[in-house]
Length: 125
Image (cartoon, rainbow, N blue to C red; front, top):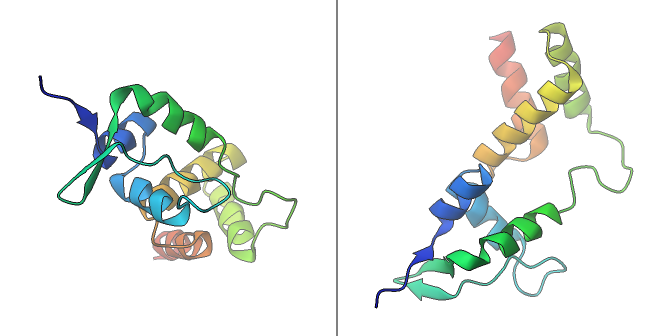
């Protein structure tokens, strides 16, 4: 009987993020971190796979991730500037933060200030 697993693409689709975001989580949260990403059940030619019944575990893991700015720190100057420009363009704060989160997940190799700068540059042409 063939066993079926989900890979980073399937996890990304289930969570509404890119496969790159899943790869980034795996590298940022290794098994020895304080919030380790769930270890795969199998690897085939270096590609990780998880049993489908573990998707809920992975969703709980993501829910437990600390949000950006957790700890009461001040928002970065880049975020503040981005939020001001977003407001000028008619986005409310929640819409602007959702857009920022989406771009941050889509480009996990960029820091949030880099994403903000990119968006500002795009808007200002």
